[in-house]
Length: 210
Image (cartoon, rainbow, N blue to C red; front, side, top):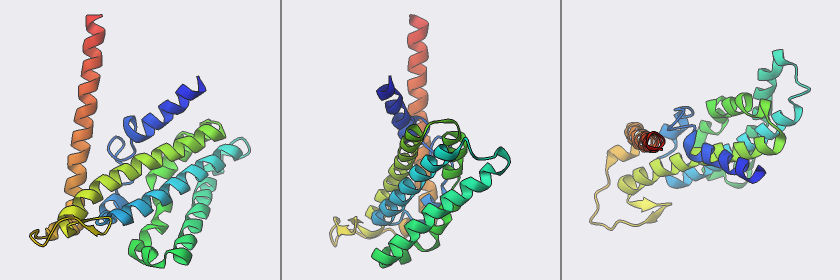
């Protein structure tokens, strides 16, 4: 039973309840840092680390946190882990830290983290909360990488900085600009939701026949 519950947590976080194309939250960084896949990967890993350990911490202390200050406590917990990520990047990956700019610090204001801490970790045990954080972070990272794959390929002719399109390719300047992320994300949201609606209709049709 536990294995099934954990499987459901990952399925929900990555697809069924994906924070970006299902809940449409946390999209600011999606539009801002997805011009390169490496930027998206590092941002995704930062969010996975932050949300997983934030949910774990919130879940551990949930029974000892007064309800009237729990939101403040959650923000403080998230801030601590974001600071850890920021210091780590500045110490070991200074160029990446500069490339991401203020968006690492803005993880604190990401609605995904507050939503999962308040909506899930506050009502579930530590292990489930930790796994939920990883699942939600993976779902977020999956969309970031999907958007950045298209933008980097058409905008720079490369994938993870490796040139894959030859000199014959003319880079699309619009793909380097933030508006392109807006349109690509819109297409991804439309595609994902249409697929989900098709599956739901198939299930309803199967139930009607049975």
